[in-house]
Amino acid sequence: MQRASQGKDDFMLAFVIRRVLQSVVVLFFMSLIVFSMINLVGDPVDMLVNPESLPDEIERVRRDFGLDQPVYVQYWKFLTGAMSGDLGNSFVFGRPALALIIERFPATLELATSALIIAVIIGLPLGLYAGLNPSAWGTRLIMGGSILGISVPTFWLGLMMIILFSVLLGWLPVSGRGETGFFLGIESSIFTLDGLRHLIMPATNLALFKIATIIRLTRAGTEEVMRLDFIKFARARGLSQRRIVRFHLLPNILIPIITVLAIEFGTLIAFATVTESIFAWPGLGKLVIDAIINLDRPIVVAYLLFVVTLFLILNLVVDIIYAVLDPRVRLGGREQ
Image (tube, rainbow, N blue to C red; front, side, top):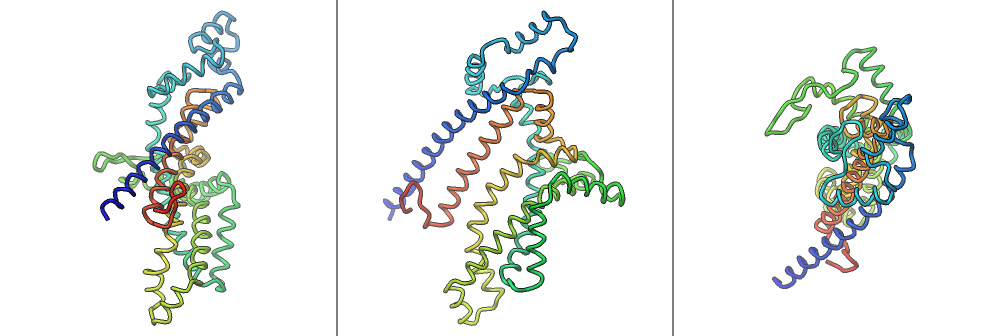
């Protein structure tokens, strides 16, 4: 028994090491693609100097930022610096790009976490209801709403929310993060009333698409599980609907939902750009939009590599969680 447990642990360790090595290869190729593509989009020197500057001044700025060197030389310097955690300095801010990303990340993490919580609290019960009552009028209303949630553009919905709740009704502030508070050394808007009022609209706007996704995923899983034999046996034993849902249905549908939510959390962080821009939320999205406008290459490259790394980590965590929750899953082609 102990030997079998040791063998499983060794196999899990080998799986993690293999995935980490694969992630390093993916990061290398992504850095090559991102760096090559970003060098094809405009010349940042045009944004850094006065258009009426003399050629000598323009050449000096290009030389100071290393933009006078061939692209492969620039990439080699970037790659060697990245290995030590140096992704270059921002052209606009004059500060390390990675430091700016880390500085803005907590605000985006707070927004994405709040949006995910809202999506789960609303989407899971609605999806369960729709799956348990497929013919009810409420189900048709819920599924119609989910289609609307997927179809309506985020930027349009954000603008409508601002017009309705801020301009017309005056209930919520238009933009910004508001006042932040500290709890156990963690700074967040949720610890103050003003911060919560600023958080409600952008978090809800970001959550709406995920609410629709969770509804449809939960409904599909519920309908599939409710047709299985063990549910019929539970009903034959006289178990109540609530007990069947709690002890038989939920454990079977939560495994795929949890694994999907982990990846969806990454997309919330990566694609919060539009929401952050609309509500002037001081996170990564607003930073990268400003960097794209100003052709601030180090910020854009650092952001994209940060997002790729985040997705690789989340994928690894999802695989491990799935293997722990469901012993039937195969890792590397072998049964656990």
